View 1 (cartoon, one colour):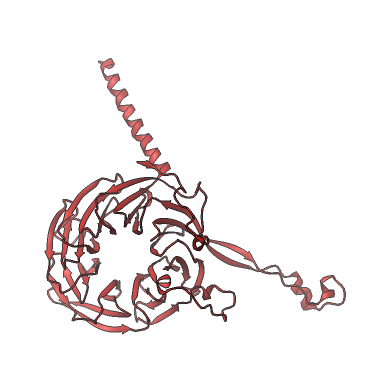
View 2 (cartoon, rainbow, N blue to C red):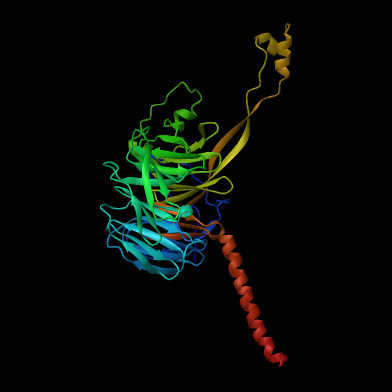
Length: 459
C-alpha cells in the first residue's frame, strides 16, 4: 500500500489553466490518502465494470480482461479470448430464475466477437462471432433475462447466446449507446437520432421480436451520452453540447439546453456566443440524482435542475482538459475524471443568499425627511428575502495517473477504482479506514500469539 501525498504533482501548465479551481495540500474533506497501483494491462485501459460489491473487471485496447478484488487489489483472473481491442464491457448479474448460478460478464471486441465469461472460475462460457461489424455497446435487460448488442444493427440474445431477434440495418451510422426504457422499450443512439425500439416476447418465451416505433430527430449533432433519470425521464447529450430531457413514456421533449454559459447569466435576454471549439462543447457523459442531471461539457461540469429547468451550479473549467466521465455519489457529491490525468471530487452546496432590502424612493426619504406614504413605510419594514444559491465546490484532487483517466468505479467504503491510458488501474483507499483495519489485524495477531504462550502454562 502506497501512502499518497495529497496535492503533490499538480503544477500550473500555462495561462489557460489559471481558471481551474485548485485546492490546498491538506484536503481535509478528501478521504483517499492511500492508493494501490494494479498492473495487468499492456495498453490503454478503457472500461471498468462492477461484478459485485467486492469484485470488478477491467478491459481495454490490449484485448485482455482482468478480474480484481477491490479490497486487496489482488488479480483474480486474466482472461484471453479476443485478438483486437475491447469495445464494450457489461456485467450480467445473478438471477434466481436462471439455471447458471454464476456472475457473468460480456465483452465485445473489434475482432467482431462477443464472449460470455464466468467470473467465479474465469472460464469462457460462450462465444459468438456472427457480427457484420464491431459491437460498440452492450446493454443487459435483467428483468427480461436478455442482453442487447449494438453496432450496425441491434441484436437480442439470451444468457446462452441464442440470437432471439434483430433489427435490420438502421442507418449509415452505428449504435453508439443504449438505455432501457419502460414498457419493454429501448432508446438507441444512432448518429444524430434516437431510435425507440420495442421488444415483444411470446408467453412461452420462444418467439421474440424487436421493432422500431419512433425516431427522435431533435439533436443537431451525434449523440454521445445517454442517462436514465427515472422511470419517467431520460436525457441525451450530443457532440455539439445539446442536452435534451425526454419523457420516457411518450418520448416527447421536456427540456432543452445548449447555451450552458448563457443560462447562468443574470440577464436571460443577453445571449453569450460561445467561442469554444466543438470538442470543448461536447457532452461526454451524463449522470443524475432525483433532482438534477450533471453534465460533463468540454472541460466543465454543469448541474441542471429538472424542476427549475435551468443550470443551478457549474464549474466552467473543472479540469485542465476534457472531462471524460462523471458519477454522482451519496451526500450530494460528484466525482469526475479527465484527459489531464486527474480525478476530482466535488460537492453540491446550497446556502441562503440575502437579496437587496427594498427602501423607499427619494433622496430625502432615505434620511427620514418629508412625508412618506403608507406603502413606503410598509416597504421599509419588510425583511430581506432569501434566495437559495448553489455552488459546486472542489473537495479533493487525486493525482496518480500519468495519462488520460478513462473512467472509474465507486465502491463506497472500499474506495475508488480508476483506469487510464497509462495502462494502470489505481485503487484509491480511505487512509483512516485502512489504518484502523491494519490495527485490528495486528491486534488479532497479538491475541493469537498471547493465546499460544498461555496454553503451555495452563498445561
